[in-house]
Image 1 (cartoon, one colour):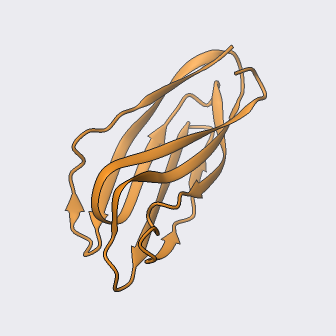
Image 2 (cartoon, helix red, strand yellow):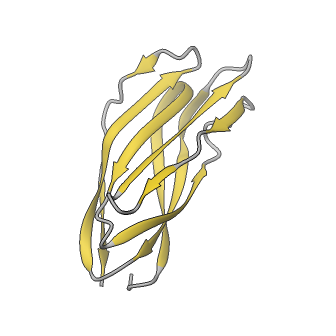
Length: 127
């Protein structure tokens, strides 16, 4: 990827059981990449529950994105694997940055906090 290019980073979940909501803080080096758009993926609403995304808090000065969404309805929460969020970034300058979850919280359809088994961070290189 080169300076000025845009790309999408997908936040995925695997082996979810009765997923009802999620929220995360994601850090990155804003000198290398910056967030331009955030969209909730299809997974949270895959059981036809009503989805309410929270407005994204994008701080490209600090390199921090705070985002989340919740679902409600009589049906069970999402099960299995899928895309929670698609984040569009724009490459700012040559360099590398970690893309790291500082905080990640997921809940079931009854708002009971679930502990993730494993959280994988990523990295981006602009050439």
